Image (cartoon, rainbow, N blue to C red; front, side):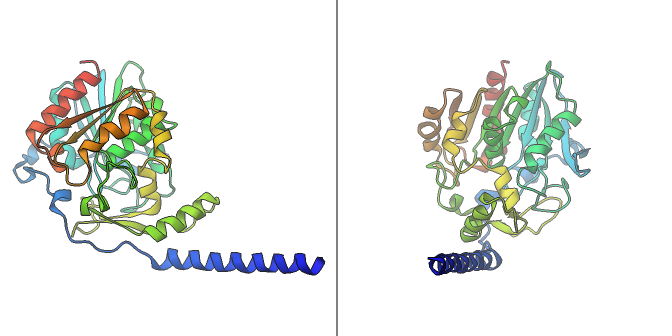
Length: 330
C-alpha cells in the first residue's frame, strides 16, 4: 500500500510538472498577432476638422502609488459631474466632441485617460495589478473633489470604456456614481452583442489568456504584464495611442467572466446607447440580452450611426447628450 501511495504521489507530481511546463510554454510563446488596420475602429468622423484651440489643456492628479492620472476639464454646472472614459487604444483627447456636447447640456466633464494610456500611469498598455483601474477611479474621484454628496455624478464611457462603466456599475465601487452611461459598450467575448474578433478590431492571444486566467484563479498573478490583446491599428505606443494591452490591463477593464450575474447586481440607473450600424458590435442584441437581466438597465439605439460615429457625428453626440440629461434628471 505504501508503494502504491508513493507511486500515485509521484504520478501526480509528474502530471503537475507537465501541466506547469505546458502552461509556461503557452504563456511564453503565444502572443496576439498583428492585424490589418481597421478604419471602423480608429477613424473618428470629423476629427481632422476639430479646432484644437478648443481642447482644454491636459491636467493630472496623483494616484495612491504616486503615478499621474491625466484628464481634461470641461467646466459646467458644479452640481453635475461626468467622468468620461475613452475607448480601446485611445485617450481622453478622443472624447472631445462628446465632452463638449455634454458640457453644453450642463455637465462638468472630466475626460480621463486610463492608466496605460495618454500619460496616465508609468507603462504604456499595462497596469501594476489587475484591479488597479478600479483603484485609480476611486483615487480620481477623491482628488478631483467629486466625493461631495451634493454633486450628482455620472460615469460615462465608450466601447471598452463603456465596458469599464458596466464593470464599475456592477462592482464594489458602484456607489461612487449616481448613474451610469455606457456608449457602444464591450460586454464580453461570448456575449451576443459582440461580433467575432470585435468586427476585426482586436486580436486576442486566447491560449495565453486562458493560461494566465488559470494561474490567477490559483492565486498566482504571474506573467500578467505580458500582452494578450493587439488592436487593428498601425500606431506605435505613445502618449496618444496604446495599441497593445497586457493581461492585467485588459482584465481590469472588463466585466468578469460571469457577466450576466454581474450585470444583475447593478443598483443605479444605467443607460446603454449604441449606433444601429455599429461595425464591432451587434446593436440589435443589446436590449434582448441585457434588459431582462436587470430593470435598472435601459437601451437606446441611435439610427444610422456607426461605432466611432457615436463620438464624432453631431447627430449621435446630440442624442447622447439628451439621453444624459434625462438620465441625470435634467
